Amino acid sequence: MVKYRTGRKIAGRLLLFLKAAAASFFILSLLTGCMYPEKEMAKNQVPYKDQIQSVQSAVNQFKQDNGGILPIKTRDASTPYYQRYPVDFGRLKPYIAEPPGNSFDNGGVFQYVIINEEKDPTVKLFDVRMADKVQDISIRLDMYLQSHKYPPVKEVLNYNAYILDYKKLGYKKAPTVLSPYTQKELQVVMGNDGKLYVDYTPDLQEALNKRKESFKPGEDIRGILAKESMFVPAFSLPYTIEKGTRKIIFMK
Image 1 (cartoon, rainbow, N blue to C red):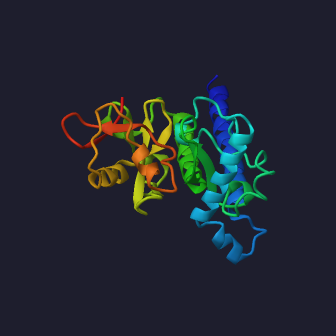
Image 2 (cartoon, rainbow, N blue to C red):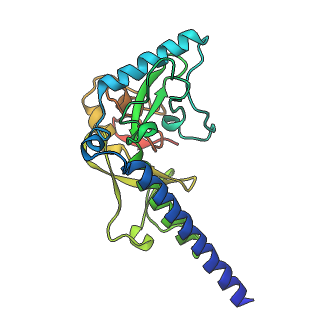
């Protein structure tokens, strides 16, 4: 019986390893685009406002010609908001010759998404290399949980976010994600749902300090990052402000 259980654990770990290897190869092949020359690859990793504006014009025209329907791919309602409505370039073919070279759909590193879908559909970006980093951590966490009952929580930030002990997941130092707003390194945290998220607290605090407008406790303030930027805060938890202050906290 002991040998059988041990065998199941080993098989489970092997399956996770194979999944990780397959996922890493798939993402790497998509992100490197080995068929592209080096100069072309460099262009595919730079966000351009005119490309976003071109896609925005195509989306606007599509919406006008199709009774308010948006050219988006279907995603489950559980998908985090800022990743929920990716642009479907297949449906935009009559309106745009091809997806921008920097788009994920055309070998680039940026996913084009739509936010404010009901009132003012707006095209924005997020860097899919961020997804690669979050996925790598998630796979290591899954492997850890194969032989441990609880995740390796190092610090409780509040009732909705936790910092993990990344050394127990095999990292020499805590992994970080590059901020699309400040180019600073952001930490990755675990939510109450056991999923991993990028912590945009420093970016939000910096953006909030530059604004005069006030926000109410309980109001999701992530929109201030996307409002004046090409990027959305992908893989993020909702944030609000602490009552009586302008301190950023995770929302309940």
